[in-house]
Image (cartoon, rainbow, N blue to C red; front, top):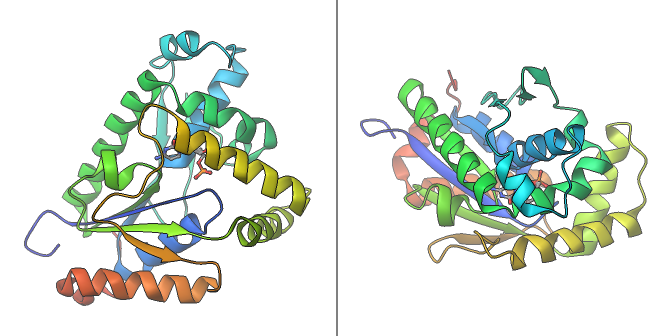
Length: 242
Ligand code: DC
C-alpha cells in the first residue's frame, strides 16, 4: 500500500473457479503485479515428465526439487513461465502436465522451494511497484499469511467444468465437459486431502461463490472487497503496475 510495503492480495480456490482471469483483471484494475503459483507447480511437473521422473515416487520428485530453474513473469498482461530457460507457458497447459501436477505439488520439498520463490517474487514486486495479486491454493494460509486481503473463490463443479471446457476450446484444445468435470473433482480431492499445505480457506479469507456470477461480476465483487478491506486501495484504481 502507499506508504507501506505494497498491497498484497491472495486469491485461493478450487481448480477452474476463475482464479486466473479474476486475478489478472484485478491486478490490472489496481495497477498491481500478478503471480500464478499454479503455473510454477505445473512448470515443476513439466520438468519431471521431461526428465522421466517416476511420478509415483515422491522421494525421487523431492530429490529433484532443486535440479531446475523456474522463472515467472509478474506482468498481468503477459503471464509467462520458463523452466531452465525454455518458455513452457503453453506446454504446462497440456493434459499430461495437468494429470501430473497434483502428484508433484504434494511433495513437501517441491512446495518448500516454490514457496521461497513465490515470496521472493512478491518481495520484488512490492519493492518495485504498488503490490501484487497472488493466486493459488495456499497463498492465504502459507505463502502470505499476512496478505492485506484474502479471497477464497469457489464455484459449483458443473459450472467450473463448463467454463474450463470453453477456455480449452478458445485456446485451441479439445474439450469434453464430462471429462473436465471428473478431472476437476479429482484435482480438488487431491489438492484438499494432501498432507502438506492442503487447499483450505484461511480463517480470515472472504469466500466468493462464482457459480452464478459472470467474470465481470466476480472481478467487481473482488475489487469491492479489496477496497472495503483496504480503503486506500481505491487510489490505485487505473494506475500502472510498473
Ligand atoms: O491453478 P492450477 O490449476 O494451474 O494449479 C495446478 C496445480 O498446482 C493444482 O492442481 C494444485 C497445485 N497448486 C498448489 O498445490 N498450490 C498452489 N499454490 C497452486 C497450485
